Every structure is written in structure tokens, then in C-alpha cells.
Image 1 (cartoon, rainbow, N blue to C red):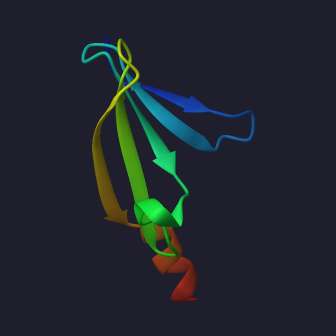
Image 2 (tube, rainbow, N blue to C red; image 1 turned 90 degrees about the horizontal axis):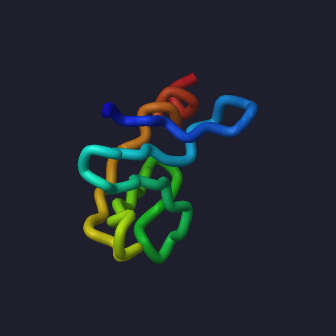
Length: 69
């Protein structure tokens, strides 16, 4: 099985499901986790236990493009 994107009816991606790894990756909007304008925070959770197994932070290219207008 491949990665599955979880999107609302408007096409906004909220999470990625990794069935082979039995994990789900979700976008966090909390400033406590480091989310800010231009920074995306992704938490990965184990589907069997519900425990968080990792956090990654990325620069948000969409925000940077908007600021460069």
C-alpha cells in the first residue's frame, strides 16, 4: 500500500496515512510545537498505539511565495 492523503472537500490536505508503516502524519498549527508563519510542523503517530513517534519542521514555500509578491 502507498501513502494516502487525507483531504477535505475543498482539497486542503490535513494528513498523510502510511499504511505500510502503520503511521499517520498530521499538520500541527500550534505555536508551542513551532508552527508559525513560514514554518510547517508535521507530527507522526503510530496508528496501533496512538503515540507520537516524531516531529518535523519545514519552511513553508507557499507562505514564502505569498510574501514575495
